[in-house]
Length: 135
Image (cartoon, rainbow, N blue to C red; front, side):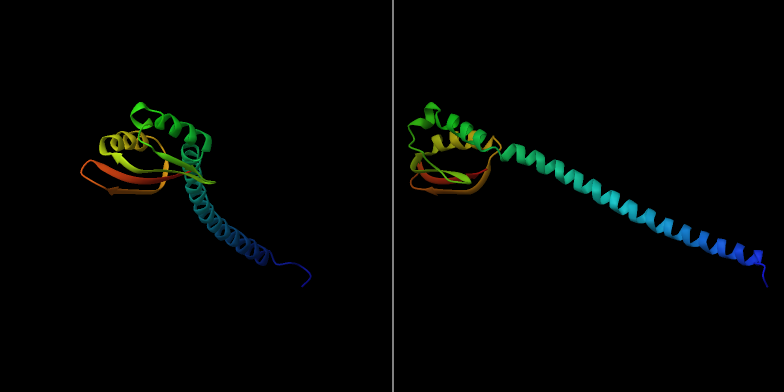
């Protein structure tokens, strides 16, 4: 009885090997799940960085809006700018529809984060509008 039976040792080694193989298989499946989640997170982070660079630059938004509003067609329209902490508001009581078309063409062809937009028809050729652009 002082000797260890080699069959018992072999069975113990087989059980340890079996447990190791099973835990390795489950670890591999968990690793593939984590890798796919990491790739999704990485894609989302790159999208967020791109959106932030396009929409988040306050100075660039102000400068580009200033350039747009300094156009000869828009200078005489009486567009009022109100700069707030997180946005800029553009409003006008009465504007010709062709002038508004020029303004909208310039604004909508750029990357602005427009949070509010109201247009109200006053007559056949004039409208009033309000717009808020956030950064």
